[in-house]
Amino acid sequence: MEKKKLYLGNLNYSATSEEVRTLLSEFGNVTSVNIIEEKGFGFAEMSTQEEAEKVLAELNGKDFKGRTLKIDFANPPKKNFRPAGAGFSGERSGGDRGGYNRR
Image (cartoon, rainbow, N blue to C red; front, side, top):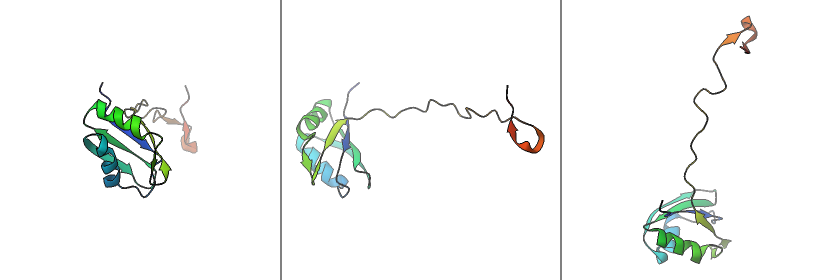
């Protein structure tokens, strides 16, 4: 699996997607930037794994707008391992007490 998506941490809260795109474009073609507003982090995707590796090597630990960047390869989104309705059988017993059916 080619790793082209990067996690960008410890961003200055005022950093914009365009500023981040400009910074990263020094190392290759930036295909997307998604900054999570007022959270101090975001994600960016480069065209190739080599470009992403270059960004990681050159910018991780460097100052950007007064904060030290923390850059790493982004992990794929976690899947929800809990099946729908898990933990609730929907059956009730005990009249108006509202208790759950214990087995």
